Length: 604
Image 1 (tube, helix red, strand yellow):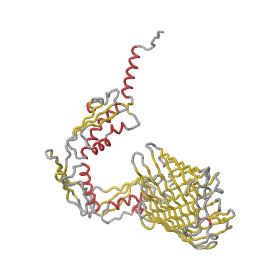
Image 2 (tube, rainbow, N blue to C red):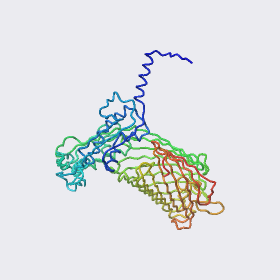
Image 3 (cartoon, rainbow, N blue to C red):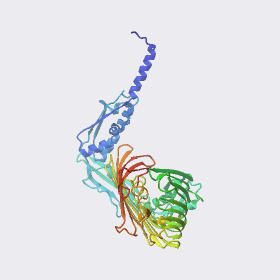
Image 4 (tube, rainbow, N blue to C red):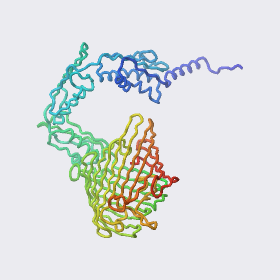
């Protein structure tokens, strides 16, 4: 069979040229080898610093032109790694399919690159023949590696300067700097002689704090919130704390504390707080679903600068139990006003009001609460609370209907040393609540306490595994079961206590099918969270819960346990959680029963 070409010679040449360009830019796989007399530690450091090695391990392929650029950038990166390991006379060669990368023009790259060979002759490792830095402030901790006979790492030189300057700044010498440096390499005996001279400058005091960038937030309020101690000796920590106070209001999208270039009269240093205000209003919503508890929806609206002083008003609403089997529908409407730096720069004032209905399997409660208090922010990780509130409630349980009015004195402390809130991998969290209450009518005086402690530890880097542990304690001291506020009693079972069991399935059995909450509670949970190299993760977990009739666990109560597995999918807002659990002990222990939980963030 004969065929006829309908393309002219010129057209065929144009297509061929275009194809050649396409092939030159086509994505290719890459094999990278590092050659040379290298010890294991140095080879590992070089592999970690090489862009070519990183590209060879990536699932994203790039064109040959990009590979040439990556290879040419690798010369400086590998040299920096060698300097940081004390090698100052190294020879580096990078060949792409046999051609030296430095000689390839990026505008005319090869059609493809399949192999890169990095040849390194590191030479001898240099050590410090002299390591001097002066003058030093009292108590300066110079890096241990900056001394005679130690490996002359470039990073050690930088760290020594940073330590020396930082120590002077910590003692009030804000303009401390490196005055001169003399670093000499002696190739004959493979030593580096380093002499560093610091200029501490005068000891300064904080001058006036100026404000720039604000439009809606009043300048005087920014000064109050920052709380910079004008007139005291300069301190980097005080400067960092002032910036942190402004950031935690949530009113500003960015905060920068800028030191003046010149020293002011009387050895003072002026500082400017440059802020950028965030949008004043914000709203959000969320949801969670389980096979038994049904659908839960929540939403909030917030104003970050209500009266021009970075005051925050947050209004939130929640609806739970939609389509569930946990009784009826629960709802919550809450408003909270918070004014930062009211009594001092680290103490906030809050005022709150809320209306809540709990229509549960074993009790019903409708209540209204108003209150006010203070929150002391001791650090980014530690907070303390104290307040006064009044609560009016109508409750109904197995003991009948009750109306009560209480005066509450809520006290609390939170310690949050987690690396992430929604997906913690390291650190610990603890929250303690102590609420003494006086009964105006309908109940007895007492004390309601709760404690929630969590700990996280992660092993491995490529596919990290996290061990997460949680312990909960609760106690109601004072009122007996029959006169205790029904919504102060404890239950176990469900997504926040023992997964696999029905919601609030464990309480105190009164007989005749009647159940009420207990006066004591213990909750224990353990999870193993395994991550892959992608966004997917796997979880195995075990939960246990105890409910007792007495105010303190004395062993006379009942336990229930549950276990299960789950999937996690990482997203920018936190992991999406899917858990499937079954009961392993307890009254509703049934091998055919299981519960499913879906939400955002880890279970704890």
